[in-house]
Amino acid sequence: MTVQYDDADPKLSRTRRLGGRRIYAALKAQISEGLYPPGAAMPSTRALASELGVARTTVTSAYEQLLAEGFLESRQGAPTRVAPLLPVPAEDAGMVRPRSRHRLSAYGERMKTLADRAAPVPVAREPVIDFRYGDLSTADFPTLLWKRALSAAASRRPDRLTYGRPEGSLRLRTALQAYLWRARGIRCDADQIIIVSGSQQGLDLCARILLDPADRFVVENPCYQMARQVFAATGAVPVSVSAREDGLDTARLARTNASLAYVTPSHQFPLGGVMPIARRQQLLAWASATGAYVVEDDYDGEYRYDIKPVPPLYGLRGETSRVIYVGTVSKILSPCLRIGYLIVPEGLKAVFTTAKQLADRHTPTVEQEALASLLEGGLYERHIRRVRRRNGERRRSLLDALDQAFGARIAIQGADAGLHVVVWLCDLPATAEAGLVARARQRGIGLYPVSPLYDPGHPEEAPTCAGLVMGYAALDARQIRQGVGMLAEIVRDMTA
Ligand SMILES: Cc1ncc(COP(=O)(O)O)c(C=O)c1O
Image 1 (cartoon, rainbow, N blue to C red):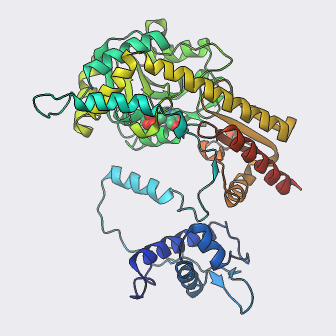
Image 2 (cartoon, protein in one colour; image 1 turned 180 degrees about the vertical axis):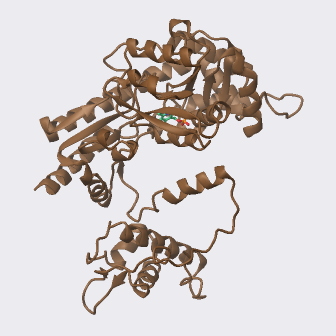
Image 3 (spheres, rainbow, N blue to C red; image 1 turned 30 degrees about the horizontal axis):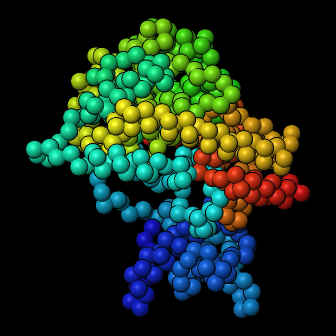
């Protein structure tokens, strides 16, 4: 749908026009989705403008357009309200939708579907205390170490500036090989390691190299959506398999007729289960019997607290030909670095290297050298011990705060490992998640519901009570206590 109102007003500055358009689009989407239900009072233009940090006129122009289109109503002296009867959007009223100007490939169409489904720009302010999973604390980044390593790497003066090796620097792959053997008990050759731009690129390469349209692939239910989507982007069909306390229910694999399984066996995302050895063996037996590949995402294997490290699937029972191991520095150093690594079976080295080369030539060289020097000098592992201790303290603060605020009215899953927990709020039904998240956002708290990580095609697996994926690695103890205190207040209000 096109928005013409602000383009038509030459008096509005370009920034204000863009801001007004975004606010208009976000409000319209939120009204249509019931976040502002029919008849509800809208925030005053002054309050919303100050919350969003924009000029009041920017919000006013968005409101005026929504009034003109019948989404809002206003009466003198009364707050602007959502119209009791919302207008039917043109596309729903049987009007012909203008065809996209762009002819897209089947892949492009799948991207478009994902983009259309993506959440609208949130109107509320950025959260002050954000439990977003995946973020780390800036204070934990080893700035001095990294600066030194980076500066040393950048100061090396080769004869010429040239492209690096697509599979990554030999120095880094050798350092990683030694690290993976020491830290994760993995034995592999350095030339089986491919350096990628974050695990996400590793998953993308696996998807494109190992799946064809209409192939079937297994994903855990619930699951890491970025993995599900990147595999489905090939046109392959996801088959969700339940993953509750102990990770993927491997007994169900036989009926899936899948050619690939994506798993997080060391710390199931998001529920946190650690796959027991019997299931691991069953998974590998299935892979070797059917010729399927197993993509093992060991995204936060370095973080375990009260339990012993679990050996990865890669190399278990000597199985190295069906498993692709995916690792990352996103949880140890920073997700901004975009450095990850794959261990691929001997017979797939060349094809992965070529695909990586075609994707982006190689991961930035200077950063690879800097990381190699941290690994070689033992500084990376020293840093792991430091962040593991700090995150262990944050985890303790979160568990204590949750216990104090909720006692037995919540259930916590997945606290033994990783950088997040799943909190089940037993007093609230799953349908209350969106409302809870919206109320928290209004109070400056970032919360993330668990339901969207479940496959809607399996309603029998859907959670019955509200759940949150709570990341804690970017927060300090005070913020954690404050955030949990506010969460408790909101839940109390909602259950009163
Ligand atoms: C299950 C899972 N895998 C992988 C990653 C890391 O991805 P990347 O290495 O692309 O930053 C995350 C990040 O949150 C994750 O949750």
